Image (tube, rainbow, N blue to C red; front, side):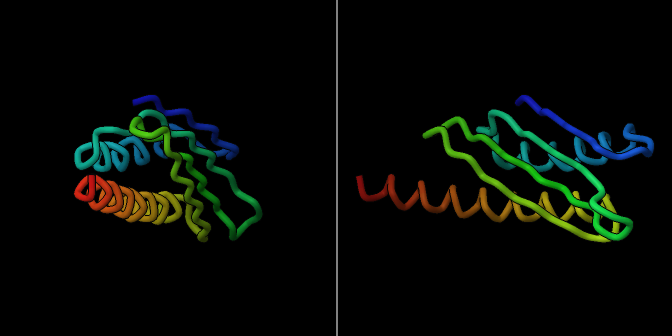
Length: 102
């Protein structure tokens, strides 16, 4: 899996990267067909910490897009991972149902 991160913050990025990588490992454990993830972490203003992600899946070249905004960057990353997880579950269920009808 290829992870591309763009961090537009003037703080210590090392801890944010580690936090995000730990969360991604959680996703990868349950769904191993993730090809690439593009992440953008930025602070829009003092109270808006934004995390955006594009997740590319190997099969059928599908793309999952998620965005989360909160007052804390770590919480934004956690919300983002939860959204991606829900979308991957929907994707897997949809593919399972389509494969059953073939």
